[in-house]
Amino acid sequence: MAIKYSSARPPVRTSLRRMSFIIAGLLILTVIITASPVAAASRSLVSKGISVASITSFGAVADSYVDSSSASTNYGNSTQLRVDNSPIVRSYLRFDIQGLSGAVTNATLRIYANSSSSAGYSVYSVPDTTWGETTINYNNAPALGSVAGSMGAFTSNAWTTVDITSLVTGNGTISLALTGISDTAISLVSREGGVNAPQLVITLGTSASLPNYRPVSHADSSIDCDDCADSNIESNQHAD
Image (cartoon, rainbow, N blue to C red; front, side, top):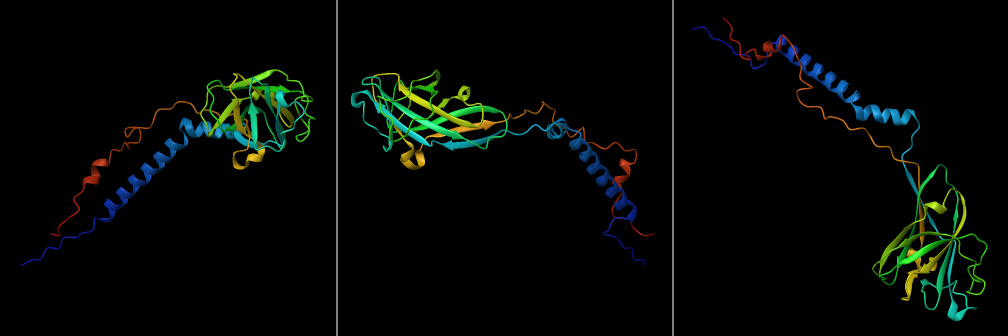
């Protein structure tokens, strides 16, 4: 009786064909990914030197508040900044901005609120940057410049934010003043308040958006081949 053996391993010709199909598929997929609009746009941004937006935070180098009801009193060592319309209470802050390299696209003042407010506060520029933290009072406080922005209603124990981009053009020293909008006093955290001290957050550069693109479908990555039918060769072949 003749014994027929069946090989569990496909013929060498079949294995080579399948390997060539796999390699061809990987090459096509690589071409599709490399030529995609997203990849092309990314390479374009790098070649044109367009940088991703960077963010830098600065702490206040001086802050205090002044009170018309105690016109000669200085509050430079207080852990609070306060604003009110009756009596007139204003807060002053100074920031020393250094180390920036690039165009300022956004500047946001962040101040932590001890108390809540239904009205908020306004932020003004202060042209005079020479006032002293431990000497400023209502009598000698510098005059206010133009309004830069305002914060609406806020809750207690939360950060408040005001866009003051118009006041920040680059490196240098800037002074700000906070004024009340209503007759209800507001308590904020000063730089002596620790981790919740005031911050000036500056964004440099612009982030570029990538163009819309059509995801590659399975049909796009299919392999056209006249010999594909040959891949269906029987794996078990019997010897005569």
